[in-house]
Amino acid sequence: MSDTCIFCRIVAGTIPATIVASSDTAMAFRDLSPQAPVHVLVIPRRHTASLADAVDAAELGAVLALAAEVARIEGVAESGYRVVTNAGPEGGQTVSHLHLHVLGGRQMHWPPG
Ligand code: DGP
Image (cartoon, rainbow, N blue to C red; front, top):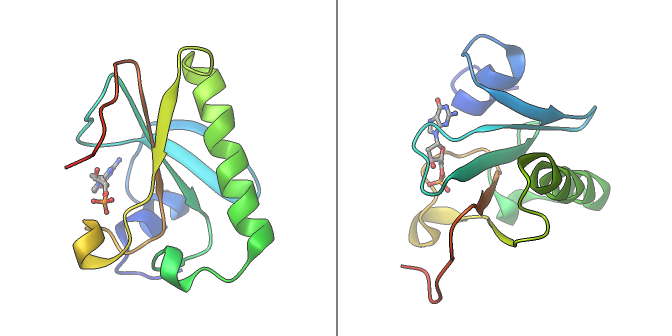
């Protein structure tokens, strides 16, 4: 846990968030600035700065599994959805705690910006 990390503080409950799902390893909550009708962030509870720093395959699997569960909960598993992680400055990462964006509820386009 990092006291200066926003997402660690959401895990600790000291910053409010709308929780969508959680497990022992991971947590899912609504993005503060949604880019689609469904926009949920899925994070490992344990602080990891980005995918570039991830070393625990089981933890990554749990995060990905929770993303799929979020899609089911949000009702987009059948219609389709996108899972994205931004890593580092050129990847567009602004919060240095590994997170998957689960986006859905509208048509996604490619390539992303
Ligand atoms: P990224 O740019 O990939 O690092 O995405 C960070 C996302 O985190 C961005 O879509 C906005 C969201 N976000 C930033 N601060 C907060 C917060 O305090 N609460 C919630 N729920 N989302 C946040």
